[in-house]
Length: 214
Image 1: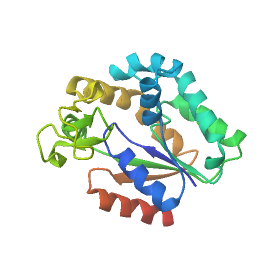
Image 2: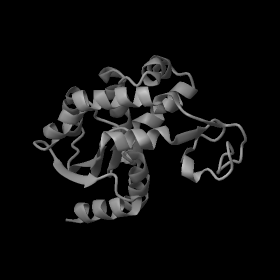
Image 3: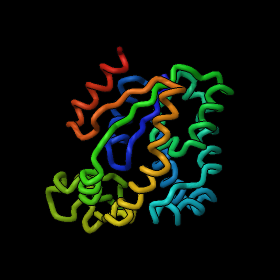
Image 4: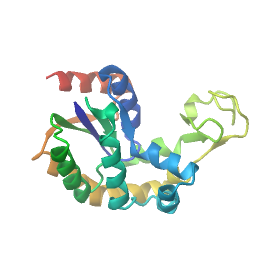
């Protein structure tokens, strides 16, 4: 199964992708994680993407499409994968559909996690990232002030630039303008499922699995 996780920034795509990857035994491919690793390692792609990501802008289609094509061709994706964060534009969706045909990939399902924009802003501005281990937490998960709950590093928790309110709202504007139409495209080119992404994590996962089974 090839599952596309779709929804606005902060709706919980990454969380559900990790859970589903373990259950379905197919790899989770997060373009966000791949790009952040590229930035950290100062690769050519990372250097090009860093400025755009810090401002909440989309990475150009040609860079993303090259990355996805290379990834889909890897042996670990032969039985399926979970795409998280791609496609984000109609152009990307059209190209991805072409790649699926070229690689003889079928059984594609788009899962749309829905959410209210104000709730998304609240969620993301309450996130903190650890500079040491890279994990991301909600403020409610942090028991000791500015101490990472995983690696116990002190003074390592930061508010990422792309989690600041002005950047988030800009990202949501881009999503509404450029990315939302992708769902309409996929309703004509693949199976689609819609789930309320603001429900508790376990409930969202149960609804997803039930919908996939049906």
